[in-house]
Amino acid sequence: MQRTLPPPLAPFAPSVFDPTPFLMRRAALLRAMHKHGRGVAIIPTSRETLRNRDTHHPFRFDSNFWYLTGFEEPDAVLVLLISDTPQSLLFCREKNVERELWEGFRFGPDAAREQFAFDGAFPLESLDAVISEHLTGVRTLWHSIGIDADWDARVGRWLEHARNQSRAGKQPPTMIADWRALVEPMRRHKDAGELRLMQRAADIAANAHSRAMRACQPGGYEYQLDAELQYAFLQAGGHPPSYPSIIAGGANACVLHYTANNQPLRDGDLVLIDAGCEVSGYASDITRTFPVNGRFSAVQREVYEITLAAQIAAIDAAKPGVAFHAPHDAALRVLTQGMIDLGLCQGSVDGVIESGDFRRYYMHRTSHWLGLDVHDAGPYHEDDEWVCLQAGMTLTIEPGFYVRAADDIPSALHNIGVRIEDDVVITDTGCRVMTGDAPKTVDAIEQWMGAI
Ligand code: MG
Ligand code: ZN
Image 1 (cartoon, rainbow, N blue to C red):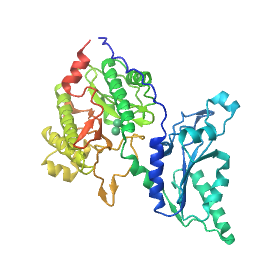
Image 2 (cartoon, protein in one colour):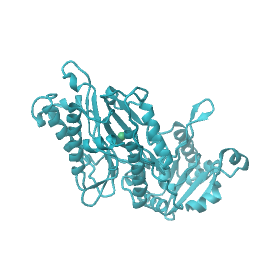
Image 3 (tube, protein in one colour):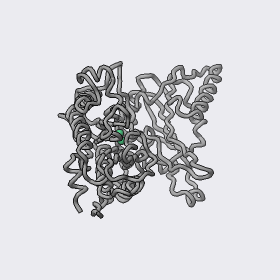
Image 4 (tube, rainbow, N blue to C red):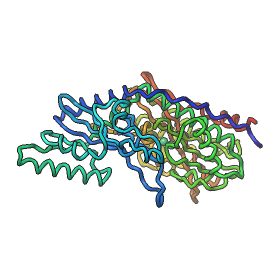
């Protein structure tokens, strides 16, 4: 049966770049840093990496760097000078007619300063000189230690140089602090512009999942569904995927990070797809599980309905003022009751949760932050307490139920793996599901896949 595929979403024209939100973030960060005395902060973007021989992985900017700058080129560093008159400086590649002919447009310092509203911008080559000029007489050097050994070594040389000048009466910094501790908590709260991009990423991914459901045929291959997802992402401007897509037929659904995606899809099996795209760096992350042939078997339906009830309980529990783990706790109770009902676990819900027996069938947590990174930055614990959900925070809700084949489990349940994942934003009263356009109930999926 050949079903009609839904068209991809229409492309959406990029809006004119506005440096205001980035300026506001830098200003907020500079204020927070100033409480730690005068300082200098070094915030580089990521570097280009080789894939093989002379071919590079597609470049992706560093999320923290981009969050503070909006600048997307490689070989760039944001330097913050923290004092009573704070300054944001960009170090980037110079204009180069020859290289631009081969590799494309570069802003160069002058245009970058203007477009991105920096207080100053300089060629990358002048970084060492400018840092040494500003590193004496400040108390704190802000650096994200341990991400990149080359940067750690370079910062070490700067410090050594500053110390060597102490005989001339200049004080080197006495504190080294990690700016991620200030930036990453900021990233948990999305502003209206960020939420618009995330909604767009959610809409494109929901469309892609709907498309894959309709394209699915017994005898097809997992990678063919990946092709449908990628087509919908690319056509709508939601590219690249925000993480390697998981297309897991049958028993593969019980492998949590299965990405081989090379197996045939069998009549009578379920297929689990966990895939999302990026829009201007912002990720979506959706999982849907559906029957390869479009109809749930009785036992598949049972496991699916339990997982869906757990997901809905978790969505209901996601609201401002509750601890981050509240949706997980809500989902876990429903899943555990389902495991007991199916004879997979014995005892009471509290007893099974206490003993941890549920982990045989549900071994991950229900939520993670979502944003510029699919597992977004920002702590889950602060001062030994779980973070409380607040309006503007974005997270996934993704309970799962995985039954591997085993001698002590009825064979009808073998190799059923279900995960249902939506992206939500916390509102003033509860949460809003951003990814609801992808069919989710048993009826909605069967209808969607049954239509021609
Ligand atoms: Mg996911
Ligand atoms: Zn996820």
